[in-house]
Length: 438
Image (cartoon, rainbow, N blue to C red; front, side, top):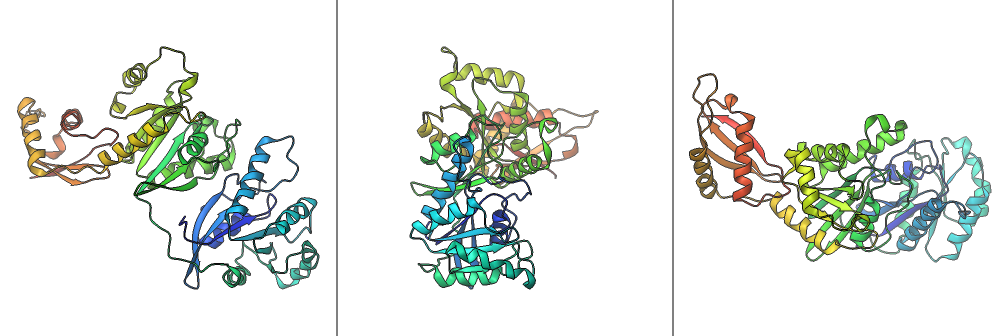
């Protein structure tokens, strides 16, 4: 989100429709919506506009006042309060069908103590007849009380009009574009959210030992030097047979779609457990979709002494030979070790991902490769590749002009890839080949 835009925090107890309202305001289904309480845990950001004015909307997890027995609920509560602290205006959402609850009264007391303006959105008021239910909610002490139905879009325009009326600052321009978008992927409980917090240097993502804590992709924008980086933490990806229920499957699907929209993917593994077949599958998914990749060995502080990254790299390549170009880095996100080196490697891989090679230089290397190992014949047919050109980048894409493009073997393309990787810096970037007839 743009740091210059005013911010509106949506808060409320679990299952009152906060994420439905968030999705309605930003005009797309970014937050996961389900009828299970507590779906949203982290802060979720989106930019929207109304009457030509832009602002950032922050979705939060369900607020539960009594959290002594559940540290995860305590983290969610803290995230909601951080959102209130960060925001210029608070949208307090309640379920109009069931009346006030003790938890909502506790949250109302907290909100009345802080200085931010508050709009009370009484949600799930689907008709004029139901507006009679508003009366008791005025007792919460917020004069700006508006009936809405986020599901049916009823009253949302009135809510937005009120937002623009009381926002303390003029809304700014549209959402800023990031220079680099990173997706953090991996199996559950390998430390993805801890890594995100270590990268941004603050407790933005909820971190908890319980596997599957992150469900919505969590977007964070980070200014680093002259570059704006958007980092997206995603749900843990398990094998299909291990995914439990509709909600988790939706989370995994959103994680994979997030990877498609990113420039680079950081695949996080638990260094102590080692790289598993599922880790390799996640790397393969990113490779198929042409994303730049890094393999992050987290929890390196727990690895037995004497283990080296070189050993890890060899064991991975021995099992998964097509991943030999993926850079590997060891970190301890919990202790914030290796973050500077990780950022430097991210910069390098992103540069490789966008690398452009001049046609002259490219063909000098290509012609030598043809001379060293000619294109094999196929069924007695002579196969020739005349020249190569780079047609695209992000990822680097090369066009090969051949007399019989359909007869060029995959093994020969792998040979050319090895030559190109040796001659040019493409670590972390998948290479794409296009064969055309000449």
